[in-house]
Image 1 (cartoon, rainbow, N blue to C red):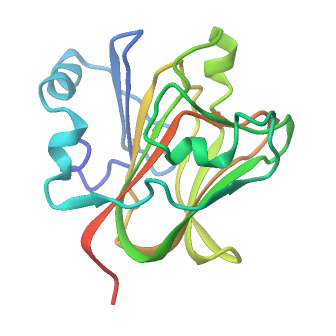
Image 2 (image 1 turned 90 degrees about the vertical axis):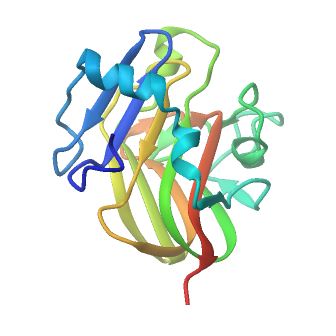
Image 3 (image 1 turned 180 degrees about the horizontal axis):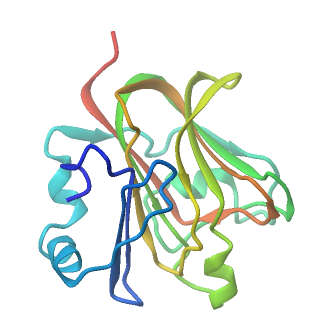
Length: 193
């Protein structure tokens, strides 16, 4: 539903709360949670939307602003395992970034929040900039997630226009920990020319 609406920049589904949120405002602040939208997401999983796309971040080099502990490295967010997660220290504007290896035409970015922890742990994912760019120094905001998220939330972001980028970066705009279980980047089958 979100991908078919040019005004939509975010869709999220909370398994624990059984709610779907479709955001169509410019800064993704608008919110609707109707039964029809929730049923649509239930019937049409996000995977059905990837027919002409490929996931390009899996096992790619990643880094983050700091590492909370040895088992929480940046690579945990692209290892395909939703039971592991990357985790920074508490700091101002913590970030995580992945190098896709070459420039792709990015269509969608999915973020899976941690699946275990306290309610507060899940809600740390808020005020998040999703950025893309051709280099570390040339990043632009693709979407902004106001949040807060809940544990196990599956967030979906599309940029307002076609974007060619090599790097995808997540950055909190405040001071907190940054941790996510997985980041998936979907691009068209051919890279940008």
